Length: 243
Image 1 (tube, one colour):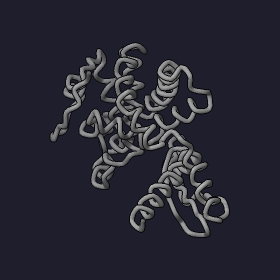
Image 2 (tube, one colour; image 1 turned 90 degrees about the vertical axis):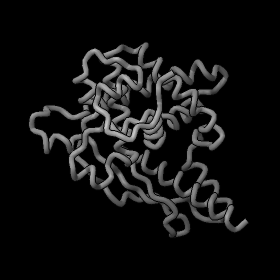
Image 3 (cartoon, helix red, strand yellow; image 1 turned 60 degrees about the vertical axis):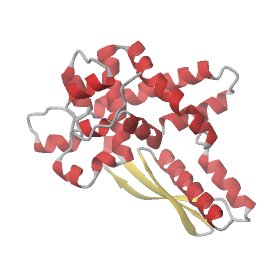
Image 4 (cartoon, helix red, strand yellow; image 1 turned 30 degrees about the vertical axis):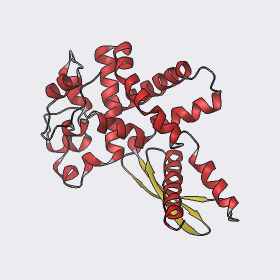
């Protein structure tokens, strides 16, 4: 199992790979996976950020999570497998994996991004984790990526099921609204940021003309789900408070 201890100090790529037990042959590839585009603005000697590796890692995770679920739950139907995969690869969950391996101390950020708390944002942590997986695929091959990612999946699957993270939050929120006599929730995009190839969508959801949740993600659909999930958490908390 990987060494997942906390580290209070900034880690360079060599220290990260030794701590995780992933000996990259090409350390420069690992460094690229950890490089946010804001870092390039202040370091012209650095030629490439992690966005291409992020693209690759996203595709690899979709495939490997799907394969793992297919074998882990042989009786599960296709629709349920799809929802489970979505729960594993959504932004917040991948950010949790990033925190579990303490990758935030190794991210290379520009000063402005660092001052604004960039290394703690789930969207950025998710991106770096995807880039890390993409770099591992190129350097280590698919079997090593499986050895790395499968324990993380196994370690979080019970929580995902118990907390209903695998269920479609938009459907759950609609069921709640209808049960209380409200019209179906409405979703509105209230902000779009980032370059064309790496946009971040911010979406709010309203029930009975009241904003009940806001979500940010790399696609409008994912942001809507995140907004619905946020709304459900708020509703559950309020229900417990006044029960």
